[in-house]
Structures are given as C-alpha cells and as structure tokens.
Length: 129
Image 1 (cartoon, rainbow, N blue to C red):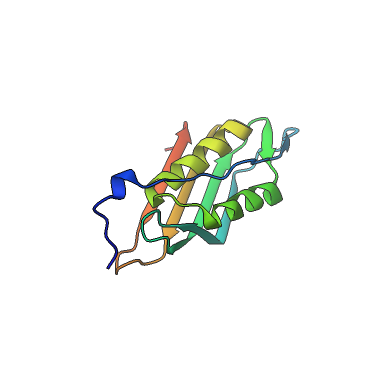
Image 2 (cartoon, rainbow, N blue to C red):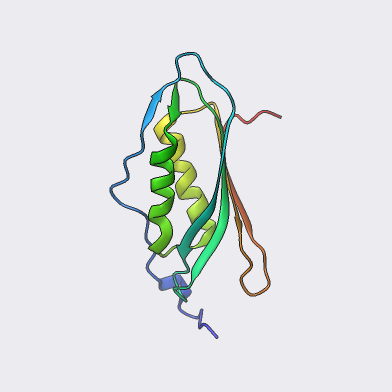
C-alpha cells in the first residue's frame, strides 16, 4: 500500500516549454468541444499513471486554439507528477490565457483508482446558463 503520510511535501510538476497556437477566428465563433481519451499523468506519491478522458469546451471570441498544439500539450502531462485536482486547473488556466474565450470548461473523467471514479472540472469566463 502506498504511504501518503508525507503527501503534503511531495514535488509536483507541470509541463515546461509549452507552445500553444491560436489563430484568428475571423468571425467564426462556433462552440468548440474536444475530447482526448488518452490523457495521462503521474500520481506524485505512488508515481503510478493516472488516466482519464479530458473534455475541453469553449466559446471563442477572437482566437481559436489549434488542435494539434493542444494535443501535444496534453501529451506533455504523461510523465509529470501532479494531483488530479490541480491538473484540471493548470490546463484551464493556460488554455484560457492563450485564446481568451468568452468561456471555457475543462473536465477530466479519471479512470478508477482504488475503486473511486473521480471527475474534476474547471470553469473560466461567463458560462451560459
């Protein structure tokens, strides 16, 4: 069994050298939704892979994210140690800052670990009701 007694002192990581690409919307502002079914990161204590399906939804204003650069960024998390709850926030912050949409949500449905299914969601901007 993994010892979590020193969990508050573990080192966490985020991807470095990220280059997300955004291009002009040119008046095209559909609601965009992507799913990436192969998302992985490392538990910072056990160093076992956490896996999940990430869904990114946003309403562009003037910039649209380029899909390949987002996929490459998500792949960078594969061997980074971080808590599931923090990863969703990190991703939402960077995507929101890059394309400045009207609103954005990032949800990760994590695969079961120890019999518990987790779902983490981060929201930015003025989401429609």
